[in-house]
Length: 70
Image (cartoon, rainbow, N blue to C red; front, side, top):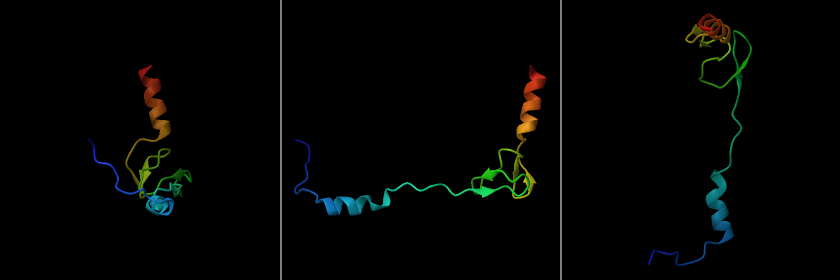
């Protein structure tokens, strides 16, 4: 037989345990270069910069690359 709880967990104890389970809304910052919303500590998907440096290709560059392949 599997182990079972010895006593019923009260609603208050159950709810106190779950007090940390709430979801939080992500905080957005704005890219200083293109002013698009960006998650903190992430590279900007629109212009490809992170902390003032270009680290990835921008959305325009991706489109140009796709056009060249077609």
